[in-house]
Image (tube, rainbow, N blue to C red; front, side):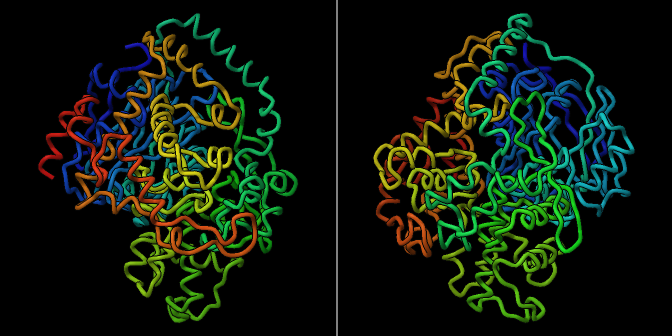
Length: 614
């Protein structure tokens, strides 16, 4: 198969055994790679009802057909598992250089199963695959242990590693790579930690078989030239994702004080421009990237200086606005410690914002935080709670499970401002002023994550409270985004610069030899979205429409404070109307279950048979 090695590396940590299997050509054609491979193999290999932190759970790591091929922004890799954070389907991707390195080592996928009795790391050097002792690295921070592993193995090895949060089972811990890239959502690192797997180290020296190398080379050159000529290239690249901070705040969609407001009066101090002016050291890009969005920064807090990649927009939104931190260096300093501990900054900022509101309302007592006066806007309060979460000490044990479970334990009305969908904390867009973005959060398969369908710019363009047409737009985005993740390319050239999606049709043809257009691509995207929905139905008892609702804060509480959306909120009736429209367009039941006819149309008849017995 052109574009693939055709090899799956299986690693059984219980037996300290590795083996190589062939990837069937039909799987490659029906699921392309990356997120598609993850979805299909998780469905096939995880037994229904598996405890996410048990040896029976598995981690699927997948590249795509464009991995390892020198194309613009082709450095993404996908991690998937059954989530310890939500109990359902989970995948999370990250950039960097791991994807290309794994592909050049000769593998399209790795499946990790079982559990080691002692800390280990997976060593891959082309054909040489070993499970090695990681006792010397266990307990170290993610950034520190990546540095040490590179010193011990060689700078050319690409490392994916977990920090203390993943080791200790914090359910929103993240996998770190390349000193600032993260697979952050839904607790993939906690599953690594439960298996005793500290890290994965990869070096590859081979090439990727492609159908038409000459045409591919010329196409790659033309794509780079085209990106450099896009006007947005020069305006967006210097600031990266932090560039949108002002835009989101000015439109009243900036999450502020645990999503009680949509406008932060100090947002002007935490923009991409302020990052560049005050803390920026250098730009940093992933494999093949012409638009280096990574911003390596030098941050100092109370005399302690650290270097960190970021902060990215999501961190600025959730650690900044959501916790009322209005200084870019302070956000960067907190960002460093979240990276070192291995904590997802999106969920981390949400959980800490939730805890601070619980303290304000007396739901968490002063005694639970050792009598300390913790408050919004105070970096020391955030760092204190972060350390308690990572250590799982006292109130940190409750918070380490995320806002949904924390609210179930704490009660006293905290459920209404535990900001999540399906157990996954909401990312950096206040959606009460954006009906499409809210619907995207509600119907995301892994929970409230912006990466499934970034609909907020469409909301702003056509009318934020307009409902008509939003379901159709969200579904279209939800079919495109899996394809981007299956090809394992970055979305930024398309989303931020407006690079045409049609360019990937020709690239795919030159790599794989398949003459596909977006009609065929979107069909695969729809197949994967239905499969992951079915996974949730199979794994979560009673899963359905009720799991698609956001917290009551979003449809019962008007936005507080100032800004263009102050006093606004959406009604439950609007949410129901959007869900009805969405389910109907998808060919799902009123409870949000894919019908037998829809599944068979998508060649998912094997799924339909399982759901009949759920």
